[in-house]
Length: 529
Image (cartoon, rainbow, N blue to C red; front, side, top):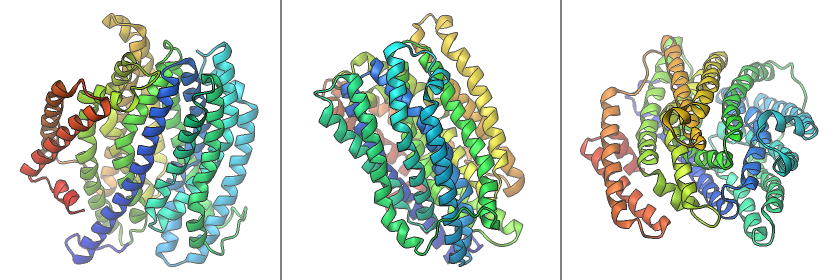
């Protein structure tokens, strides 16, 4: 990407291309997340918040650690900046050499870790889910051993995503998980009526492995064309490969620290009454949706573009600052109203998606509580992704690690206090400690966001969301929430999905009308698309 004046015609084309890339990422994520919501609705129908549901959700998190440590986030931060820079310089031969070496090294590491994970599963269970005993613990062990190889396949899928994103092929890589979700949905429907919950959980784990293989199969033909002539090699001494490895190590530990934060939440949830683990997972499906759709889409589209910036230090800083500030506004425009909607209309949303079969009204209220707590840090988590991508574009992987470590320390301390002491202080049932648990994680996310922003100020200048713009979005979101709640008074007795369509339709219409009256530029850009 060439450095240019932001007002030039070429600059406008670059911004348009970036927004188009973000839209493609968002479209792919939207399809995969919608498929995920359907999967979770079917899962809730057959499992509700039962022991089998808790076991499956806990089991899924353990091999998922492998995917998150070696998968998309780490490869995006360590591999894409190097690979995209080689493509920007026109050195496609070296780019293919780096891609082949990274794939070979990644495959070897993943195979070793999958083997060790399967063997050491009982020890993982003791460390991650100490609150599980008897049949619930045995089921969790069995599920983890089945799911580990599938997680290894998803790591390979993340490598495919890195190749596709670097070549600006954004849609396929983010839409591919639709295949994985489709296989799991088919498994649930096909076996749900005849299997017990424990047997169905085992069958579903095998379906997850099959879906992982299909997800790679969807991406491979396109990837193969882009890296035609690539050879697998364990050559780790080439300069670019060594740079990827150097970047990989701190990002690996940074992601590991973030995963520790997530696992602290999961571990504490296993010590709460039955249903907490599954309810936390249901809430995560919802509050991660806007983070993925808007935070991840903008960050994923900007990382290759930022990594390809050239020119003097001040020129590169100017480009990064402009792209960062534009992305922050885009994310805020969508994520802040999402947080308000979850807080004010969470019961409507949860009912529309999960209220079926074994999932009852009391489960709706419990998940809504966990979701409301999570809204505390929703905007910080989404904006933090873009800030982290800017650090990675600058080849700085160490500072995000430091800030993530602070976040984990806070999550651990605040989470423990909130989960086990706040319910007693407020005189409520112990299970409502889950709300304090998700809220405390949100507070820690804001601390990490503040550190990321302050650390970048010296390198690219002042960044952030303007106060006036933030006030406009707050006003529009609150008015929209009031309108949605007002509509719900009249449609509460309707079929939950239909009621949600009417309520959220009113929310969206009022939000759009209010931001249009305020002449918010992001709305005009959205309407043009």
